[in-house]
Length: 136
Image (cartoon, rainbow, N blue to C red; front, top):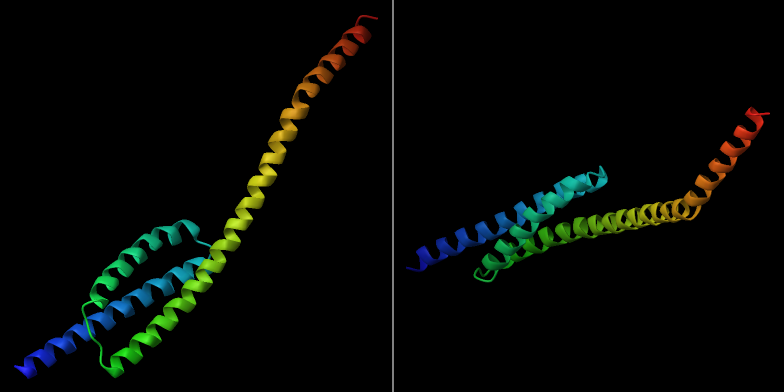
């Protein structure tokens, strides 16, 4: 009985580590997307990443790891977190960039609203001057 329990535990440990490796693969791909500034695809992949994390959380709560497996898990987690930190840094930079673009766009809109009525009046004055000159 102990041999079958040990085999089951080994399978569970391998399954858990495989899930961490899949998560690492996902986050590496997301990191590549962030480096390539493929923001829409990155957001799509983030959904898959969240699903993997949730599945991993459930599995992790049920599996006990031996020393070697704990070490491998720690290595995988460290790599995952390093990529995640860099992705978040890039996303914050992109958010700030978009915020600046929105601010510039709002200023242009405000300027257009402020001066557009005056431009219409100026065009009217030019038309009046042209009519006066043409009739002389």
